[in-house]
Image (cartoon, rainbow, N blue to C red; front, top):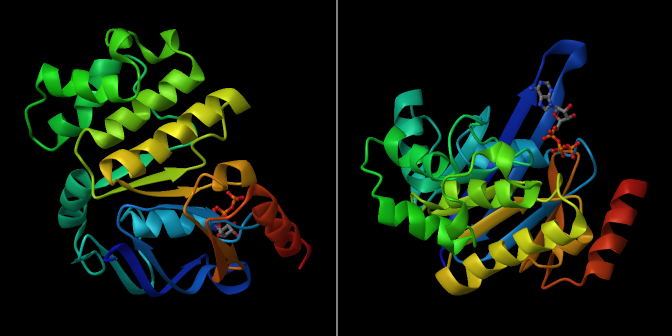
Length: 242
Ligand SMILES: Nc1ncnc2c1ncn2[C@@H]1O[C@H](COP(=O)(O)OP(=O)(O)OP(=O)(O)O)[C@@H](O)[C@H]1O
């Protein structure tokens, strides 16, 4: 199986001198196409930094990041932005929708930013695929948290990205709404062959993934394939105790 995302020897340090933090300390990891991977680890272990570097939102100090067989490292900002707009979808814990725009307008935004047309049919299809065909004209403030996150997922998917990244996508939702979002992500992988990489603290969320990759102190610390929630929770407990 070919890899959708590959990080080779990635280092990322913040600050300098006494306040230096090595957020990523020689990370090597591959994320295969059409699979759902969860990234877990104690607070401060580098999960968000890994996701941001893999998505081209942050730059490693050294090492290589390859997405869809394209090397991101060394590209200038314009070229990186262009690549991201075509190939990367990103979903945040806090949804990050534009509050003054309707659901349909939010979903159209990435196409417009990429200088593409945003046909009504395409926008409607994206919102239908997340179960929100009847909420096109609603603004974020008129939607529940779970619905807002589904609009954010539709917005990330409308460009048909090579990879969908999600940083704690269920972190702001109650457990039922969180389960719906996870089922949606799982369905994208199973039905559309979408590659999904998700950071989460929640073993129940990680259980929906094909594989869980663990981080500790900026390094990869093993993985679990087709994990049970109990196995993930046990692994997290031991990582946090170390
Ligand atoms: N912009 C920044 N400036 C300085 N230090 C940073 C910055 N971003 C992250 N760090 C540090 O890098 C380390 C890794 O941070 P990161 O956010 O990747 O961890 P995380 O595993 O996602 O944490 P959490 O689970 O708490 O969200 C932490 O020690 C953090 O304090």
